[in-house]
Amino acid sequence: MGAGEERRVPPSARIAEFPHTAAEQARWWERHILEVLDGLPPDAPAGTVPRPEFDPERNSLAQRERAKASELTAAGHPMTASGVKQRRQRYQRDGLVGLADGRAAKQMPSFGRVAPAVVEAMQQAIGETAEASSKTIGFVVWRATQILASREDAQDIEVPSQRTLYRLFDKLAAGTHATGSATTRRSVNARPARPFGEVPACAPGEWMQIDSTPLDVLVRLDDGIAGKVELTAMIDLATRSLAAAVLRPTTKAADASALLARSITPEMMRPGWPEALRMSRSVLPHRRLTALDERLEHAAGRPVIVPDTIVCDHGKVFISNNFRASCRYLGTSLQPTHKASPFEKGAIEKTLGSVATLFAQFVAGYTGRSVDRRGRGLENGPLWSLPELQGLLDEWIIIWQNRPHDALRDPDSPKRAFTPNEKYAMLLESCGYVPAPFSGADYVELLPERWQAINSYGIRINHRTYDDAELTPLRRQHPGVAEKKGLWEIHYDPCDVSRVWVRDRRSEPARWITVFWKHLHRVGVPFGEMAWDHAREQVPGGTEEQIADAAAALLRRAHDGPAPEGPCDEAVPARRRADPGHCLRPAGPRSAHRRSSSGRSGGHRVGEGHPAGPV
Image: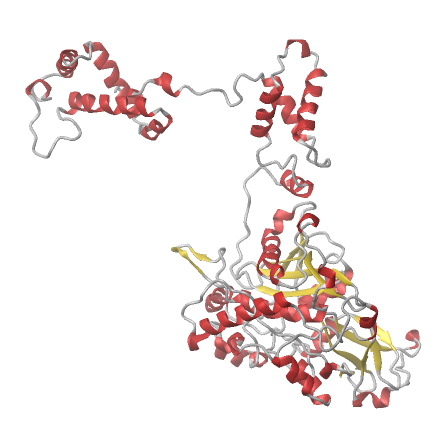
């Protein structure tokens, strides 16, 4: 190596680019060159003495090269000393690759012998498909030939054969979905070419994402017609916790506000839920949290997370005045993404996909993600009602919180994946817990409102009658709001039909009256368990086995769907219009137990413990 020449590590790994014969020949030469340089071959045992003609202390480098040339020639491999010197220099410069036959690893151009103009035309034709409807490969190839024909130098361009153009398309269209899904193609085209950035989330609620998507499940709507609903969910980036999720026929701004209220309110245990789902049986520090927030005494194993910043798209639901006002009330910042940039909220997009694969496909009435994946006669089978399916989803979220998440891996132990609840418990040690000053009345304030009269029979909403003894002084009375012409302010939870709230303006300050559904005790509310395919470790009280049993039970119940009670013609939706719950009661001993209950107290027990239950 000459003076001033920089020493570098030779690219030895490139030997894999050569055929096997050329690589073996290079290794054969390496053994001889190393003997010339060091006096010993690489496989010489320890303590071996160099042969006299190759001993560096006795002979110069030129003498050793002449000795090696003579040895190879005598062995039947004619070689000159200058040839050995050239190979020695290449080895010192390029390592093992320098001894290989360069012709054996000759690289062809990326697109073979295809002219650059043809490649440019094909790239333009593929680029034109980004915003267009999906077409076949044949069309794109035809379009590329039309682009070539329109060039001024078209006479000088050699157009390859049809088969070559098809192979060229396969190389250039890789990853573009040029002939696939139009929505996927637009999403890929909108993706920036620069590296993806990431905003670190170091505390629960620091960054949250919200989005809506159609749920691929048919439900029995209030009018008895089978239809699909929309799922709106919010996820916490730091812990990957599903803070809340609601199902609605069409998501409105009021539903998004209700979702926000659910995220900062404890999810109370409900009758029929396994004891394994209690927060006291989870990895969450229940005793410490209860000392700070007494609302968690009977809570389920889902953490309470107060959003600091919510990332959303430009859907009219999330940029509405109603949702913005709810965020301002809680001191939450709203951060819309750039338009047509779903990758900026990839966590919630992926989570909604997980809901489809881990929950929706196990539910009776699953339609698949597209028309070509849909089965026959789904609307005639057993379907859950919207409130029933919401109950199943709420319980599945508790299962989700105890399922290891791939995005929650320990950097020092990458094979260990934490659950959202475990991650939340760890972050509490560094971030602490400050309970939100959020009472049941505050929850009701965030719910959607409607104005109705209080009649002698109570309040009727969507063919459901709500009544209570506390309404007696208000029946057929004027609330004192002149603009509403005798109508009372009523708030309701779109995801819970068991009760509504009436603002009583007679007292100072005004208070909320909780009014339950009159026939709540007649309807069995299904509570089950969802499939969970990971066993959790280090959970006290044998909760691992109990959660696994609960997961298997929901898989069966969600798949079987609700069973009709007594004679009921499922093909006649008109019968359900009078009583939507008549043919939709779930089977099982727990449902029968509820039906055997009577009186107002039975109805109250079904709904007690709900986060929105100011008494």
